[in-house]
Amino acid sequence: MVTQILFGETFSILEERGNWQLVRIHFDNYEGWIDRKQSLPVTDEFIEKTNESSNHIITDKTAQCYCKNDSTYLLLGKGSRLPQSAGSTFHLGHKTYTTISKTKAIPKHYSALKVAATAMDYLNVPYLWGGRSIMGVDCSGLVQIVYHMCGHDLPRDSSQQALTGTAIDFVDEARPGDLAFFDNQAGEIIHVGIIIEPGKILHASGQVKIDKIDHNGIFSLEQGIYTHSLRIIKRF
Image 1 (tube, rainbow, N blue to C red):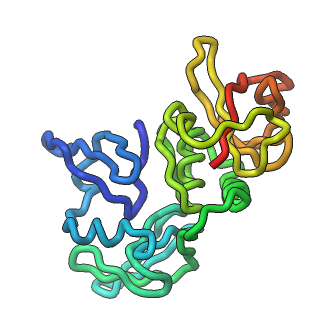
Image 2 (spheres, rainbow, N blue to C red):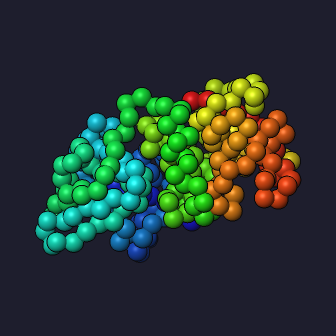
């Protein structure tokens, strides 16, 4: 698994082989194969309309949606995208759904403090390679979905994310919401985490956890050693 497509995210189908479809996700251009049973055809007009920030909401927790057609429910993880305004209904295929649990709209202006607060909701979520959900995340998936929920889209991989933003010269100048990137001995970016307060970083390594960070890198409170070498800090 290379990534996850959350409910409501749109994509283009590039190729089809039997029960599999090669797709490209619209908001980050990531490509991968999915089972065709997991996709629902929609029109270009639907995609253009719902991808506008004013025409969809991002769920801030597990959301429950009621289907009027067959009296069933959808249970959607946090970070899912709903094509509607808060409190109204939305249509998928021939079915009509009503959101019956609390949701929040994407803010018009991204807030770094909001990033740090949202990231804390993922504390103790297990590590899952390619994961982007509350059931499991990898380091860059955590960063991407948290920033997405706060109104700022980032690429999928840590090496891609490190190419964006503005560099911070010293770790002591880092603020909540800044991203810290870490490299291996070959100089390749292999890890990323979110600064939540001075000297502390939230990142996915085994599980989403909080460790210390200084100019050397991440100091694991559990292992008592440095586990990741600091390369750069970026602000958005």
